Length: 435
Image (cartoon, rainbow, N blue to C red):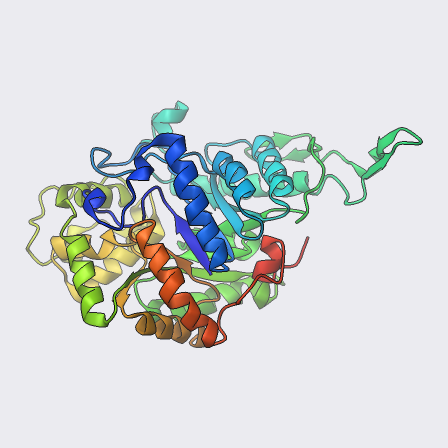
């Protein structure tokens, strides 16, 4: 089980700070980060979570007037949070479009040492509108180019992490030898986008490489995941779409000679918990009532690469004619497919669609009793829809505390979740081999 960490939760509510479950400590810069971080991450560790997923954005989001959407940079945050924890893993987001392989390989190798082997890299190609302007580009690189660059980036970083043998460091005080140069080799990478001589200037980490996590579910994203990803963070609004995705990706990995257990499928779930289903539904309605439709409309536009939805009435049923073809979207194609699929099936109004997306940005949202949520998680596992869930609390820290207190014990009784840590590294938590 993984937990998603966003600055104040996964819900889009622009007036989320009015929720009693929201902590005002989030407002207060690094001091607030320390207070909430120590409480929140130690709570996750008490719940025996495998990992915490730290999302990121390279541009300031919509709705900053009301939404706490200005978070710390994840790599830096992980270095700080590692000191407050000892077992839980950290998956930090970083972009292949707006980074350099040597720097990023060095940063994640450093984190692997700092955390004692508890770090993973969430690989993104950065679809967010406006990020390009923060890096001197007039336009966002096209979707196909971003993935071509990502392939080259992964080839380079993988070679860099492998440029030191595990036994390269001798550290012999008597002979004065620190390392064996013959066990450290240049990589001489020359790809279409990157030329990197290597070797890395930091020794191989406890895991060999960080756990490689990827979140794209477009055709290009799935091909990338089948080749490189060890965990795949994916968005599905229901089990019926999650099951075929799971089977397809496992099959694609097998075609590349990989074992099923070496690629972990990790869908998101956003749970709203009540003492019973009725109370949970009421809690969900109250949270949705805090949303600003115009903030949601702007976020929807961002998901579709800047497409203009301003002319749509909030209370008129939508059709596919109101949306561009997802294959033409130069932003998050996989999320565009999820959204248009929902529109085709349910014909919601724009207001209803924004409420459905508000809780978890297109991931599975479930409002119910602890028993219903635990039973649903079990059903997804048994049905071949998930290996691990990424829990995305709508509001932090309240909804995460509810999950740890009320749902985790039920999962433990079902034999679906550990009662204590038996492994040390993130790779071991996920059952992944060390490269």
